[in-house]
Amino acid sequence: MNHSLNGSILSLSFPGDVTSTTVDALRQAAFAQLAPQQCGQATTLVLDLMEARFVDSAGLNLLVAIVRQVKPMGMRVVARIGNPNVQRVFLFTRLNRYLDIEMIKREPVLPQTNAPAGA
Amino acid sequence: MPSFRSRILAVDDDPLARQVVQQFLHHGGFDVVPVSGVGEARQLLERFGTDAFDGVVTDYRMEGETGLDLLNWLRQKDPALGAILVTAVGEKKLVADSLRVGAADFLDKPIKARELVAAVRLVVERTRRQRQLEKTAAEASEIGCIQKLLLDAYRGSVHSEVKMVHHPRRGAGGDFANIFRLNDDQFLIVVADVSGHDLRSAFISAYFQGIVHGMFERAVPVAEVLEFFNRFLISKWGNPGNVATSLALCAVIIDRRTSKASVFTHGAPSPIYINADGIGTPLGQGGGPPLGWFEHLECSPVEFDISDQGQIVLWTDGLQELADRADLSPLSVITRLASIDSPKSEPAWLAEATDDVLGLIVDLAPAGLHRLPILSERYQGSQAAEIDALQQRWAAHLNELFPALPEAKLHDILLCLREAVLNGCKHGCQLSDGESMTLDILWHREPSSLHACIRDPGAGHQFTVDLDTDRVAAPEPSHHGMLLIDALSQNRASARNGAQIALEFDLTSPRTAIV
Image (cartoon, rainbow over all chains, first blue to last red; front, side):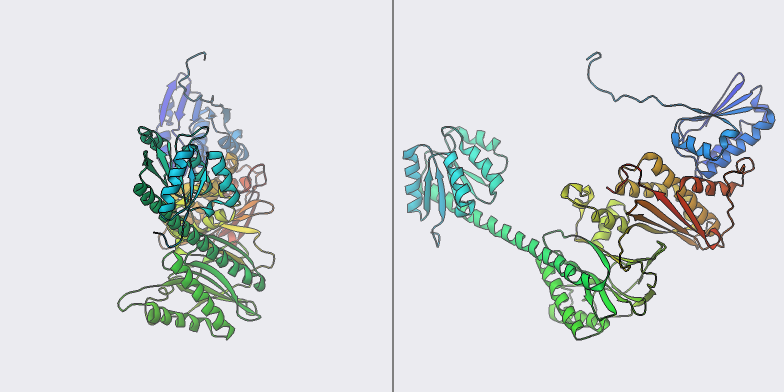
């Protein structure tokens, strides 16, 4: 899991699905960055879930645990999502009450062709 | 010289050359019908049929269409009819390259009588052989049709809906399914596979069905019929120290009076009984060896209750092998093949079948077959660790059966199944190797919906999921799964304190109909 601290914004990038089979490793990696001394002056935590197509209940539990860890520090939590199915799961579980959701549509990638530019 | 005069069509626009060919062939013992061009030849063949001729001799270069045009037309019309193309020096290679399929021979000009007659004899012989092969194939298909008719003739008398899928490797094969009415209360379902998949196997299967039918007419018990045929295979068609022919079979006696079924399994895959709740149970696990292997045949049927009028699904090892090859469950293969309404809708993996493929669904409810099975699997508790692979397997099945299923719907179904199976493995089986849970999936046709039943052996625990309360604020970790299931499925019913969950997914949204 990649992480970065950019001024007041701490970002955690989840490399793929957040499910029962990935959650243990993700939990370890995430919480290593969420100790008060690690967060520095961060006021916003961005959970980058752009690569996640699937978040199951174990994944939700991890995200809730992260929210509960950083809220007492006064941090705002933003979940950046690229998949509408994941967004739907967040909405009906009311997770959106505890974090802000940024739904980012991926630009469709045009297939490569051999046609010359302007053809 | 041929024993009777074969008829040859000679095509040449040069009258002199035509006359020479006619004379050579006439002296060689053939009847010759000469024509002056491709158009005339085609007309004649259309009018009298290609069967009226045993061979064609045609010049290549003619006014208008060439001899090659005629051969290409013949390939479409009657590939069995052999032909000789007469070419001038230098033309042979050019023509051979452009002739894609070849029942054609070449003869160089100038034509010599002996060479022409020898070449035409070969062509006539090849035409006869090809026609005989075609006739045999047509007869094999006819036997295959009769095998289906036999089933059709009986199934109407047993007040059950029957769906059969049958794809013999050739026109006819050793696999067969049949239903015999034993008396007012009982009928017998047989799905069997004679070793081999050729006409000989088809003959033995027909022979067996005849014997069985005759013995049942005389009220001989099923076990005795099987023992008789076992002895018959060994003593009459067996060689000492060698198994010449064997018969793998599964036979199920349905008794409507007692609501019991008895299963005999001899070398065939165990059938599955799907009860009214959609829960599948393998029947007659183990069973005995095929008929024809050993003198002594252990005939001890397994009995089970059918009072809820569920479905019995049976198949032969050819279908099992195909299912393994396609990485699908046999149930899905049967349901997928049952949905074929034209050769175009056949799945590509059907062409990979190396054996006869036969499956049968018998619905004991009077107006049955409104549901078709997709999956009936058992997972050990420890298989929670393999949940990603299991999820991929379910996705492969759903994609195969519902290729137009919207991605969001597929996501919801998979997420619910994942949560329910993980729940069963963890809470019901304590992640143990020694405990197992089951997943059954059925497709209901009208209205189109998917029904899944997940059962574990645990005591269950109370799920009180209320979407209006703030579950996430104070999450019970294990309850998030049920929250997801309730939100994503159209219906959830629990039994045994949550140790059995039935889920329903609506597939009526646009373009989710099967295949």
